[in-house]
Length: 323
View 1 (cartoon, one colour):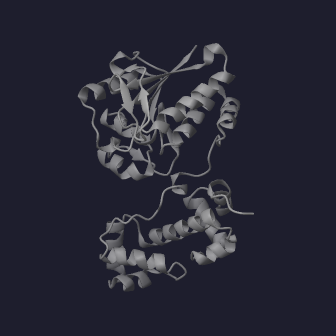
View 2: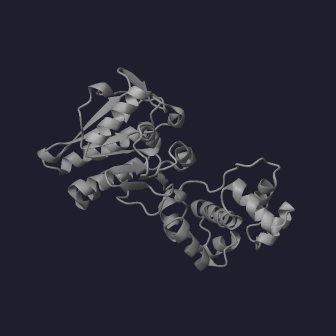
View 3: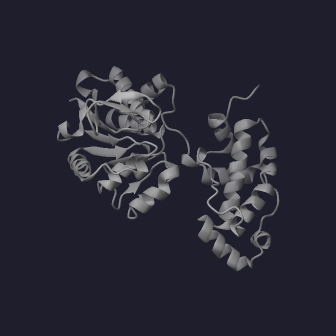
C-alpha cells in the first residue's frame, strides 16, 4: 500500500526543509516495491507560487483545505520568520484535525511552532532549531523541550532540529518503515550519514551575548574568554565582577541562564571546537590552549556535552585541512 506523506509549506518556508525530506522519500522509492513506495504531497497555505526564504519559487500541489482527510505522515516545514507568524484559527484547527487523524505527524526545524499553535505539543517531548528553543518553550511551556537532539520521537509525534536535521529524521522514519538497509542505501545515494553522532551542540555556538556590554555578567564572560587557561574558580570570577562569591553565583545564573561553571566549561568546549575545525593542532595542545586539565579531560567533557569525542568531531565536522 502506498505510504502517503504531506508536507506543509507557506511563504518564506526554508527550501531545504521541503526538498530534504522529499529527496529522501523519492530516493527510497527506487529500493521499494511499487505498493510500498512513498507518495509525497506538498500542501500550501494558499494557491499559486510561494517564495522560499532563499528566493526559490515553488508551487504546492494543492491548498491545505483540499487535502486528504488523513496521511501516513504529516510534516510541517519551518522558516526563518515562522516563530512570529500565526496563520489563523482556520489553519490551526485544520492542522490539529489532520494530525490527529494521521498515523504520524511532526515538524522540520521550527515547523514545531505550527504544531504548537495548533495545540499539538502540550505535554509532549519535542525539539526544534537550537536558536528557537527558548521561543518555543515560551509559546508552549508544557512541552518537554530537548534542544540538543537532532530529532525526537514521542509516540507518533516526530520533531527535528534545524534544517538538515529534517534529512536525519526522514532517514529514521524510512528505517522504521522499511528497515535500516533501505535507509543506508538512500544515505549512500545522498552522501550523508544514516545517523549523525551527537546533537545540535556540535553546530550551535554555546556563547550568546544576551547581557548588556557593561554589565558585571558580560564583563565576567569576557574575562573567561580572554583567560581560558586560568583556573576560573568562583572566587576568581566573583572578584572580576566585584561581587561576593555567593551573590555573584546567583546573579550570573539568573542573567546568563547557566551557572558560572557551566559557562566556563561551555566556553572551553567552544574554543576547542574552533581549533578542531580550523587547525591540525594536536589534541593535547588544544586541551592546554582551552584550559582543560589534559586531553583525557577534554575528551570526557566533549563526550558529555557534545556526544562525540574531539577526534570524532574533527573527523566529521572540521574544514578540509592540508595534509
